[in-house]
Length: 140
Image (cartoon, rainbow, N blue to C red; front, side, top):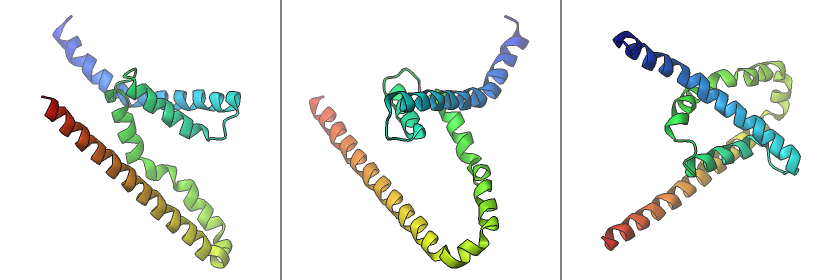
């Protein structure tokens, strides 16, 4: 293989990495949608898709490096996905004038609940990992 081709290949692969990973996420979502419909699950397809991706990562079928760049790109561009929500707020200004405080309370309460439960889960997993590491160190 020539030197120019060896330099060219990593650049092409690096540029294709994010689109391929986003396509992987979309494919997992389609599979999850079909699973939800087929099994009549009372869960949204995006939650089932995330569970599938987690299972694939934990079983080491999909390496974490294969999904990291796509996830970072999606998180960086998240604001773009909220533009329709801003348009809806502008279209329903009257509704916000009347019931805006209720909507705000629901958003604030759900945000606090999600942040609290996430912090609790992270704390539990961190403590579990510390105990596991301590046990592993004692065995050695």
